[in-house]
Length: 455
Image 1: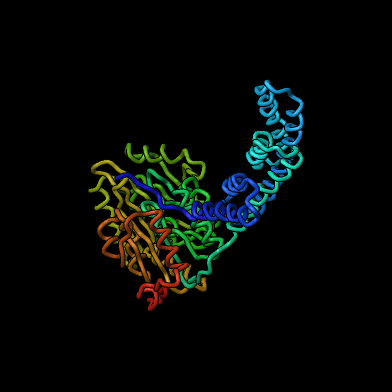
Image 2 (image 1 turned 90 degrees about the vertical axis):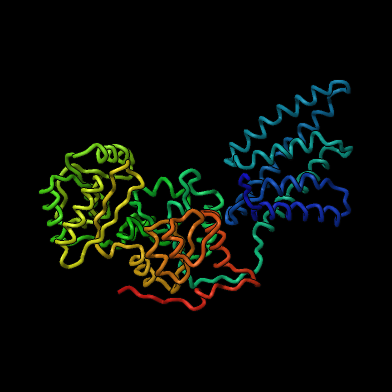
């Protein structure tokens, strides 16, 4: 079966607004033409409430513009003899030009469509009333539709909001699909919830730079957890608020060892709120291919040469054969007497026999950074959505966790529940938890809570 999107609130509100327009027509005697107020209600219904007043004002201006030129065109049409009907249609057609041009001059292009509708409603309806009365009636009907749309859009059913939860979602495979990106539904609903004060952020393996192009227009208020939990990044201020970097001593020892093994590595360094990626001469085609692919991004800063002494080293990235990755991991673990290191191996973006090996500080985890963020907030409970092995520690630490429909087996095992989808399913679940209906109760896991703290 194909995918059928759910009926959205905007559709429901539009239907309600049209029904109210018809009801007003009946209550006022039914002498008008509710089709025009209904059309106005459909055109003016907006996805965001804060835009509704501005749009309504602009559409009223458009209505007046359409009415003025409609009156002029209707008056001119009365002077055209019977039998020259097409000439009347030409008058209406060319009257569209000054209508649209006036909306442009007044910098109200959003009102153009409705202005044109009002013009046509005045000139093409079979109404025996004088043109001035016809223009006034059509204008009133259209303005009624605009105001009804505004009122319905601003109306909200009373719902309690559970503001004690921090919602954290993975990114790739969770709210972001490789083929779909972030759906318009996700963007709309998340922005509405964020504007209402919901605490929501994402935790991702990506660098902040690689997220920029794919985040869409989600207006994050909280910092995001990036680079597998190594950093906490403020998207608005473009600042790294926290960074679990490697010690200078360990960094030097790793560099020395990799140099002895004649291995190339990418060194990710945060320096003065900028992520710099240092590299040298490549040793295999795969690391050169990765560099050529990623360097095209305007958000990445590759530097050929030595790193600065005062930079914060976030992680090493090696693109090597599996057997080399195993050797490096084994030898560095022997050197790591203070148990400072964390190794992450990823084969999802490499050919057979190769892998990406990342070397982090042990506290560079999504779980650790999630609770660091939680300590700065009034929220004390966590709801986590994950899809892969990098989300597992965060999911296990959360008060309540969900795995996406196509999550890896370890993510499913770590979750309290599994969803039937990803992006849209995550947002619908958040809506049910954040704004539950009167008959909905919170899951036991959230009512009791774990209340964990960072060590």
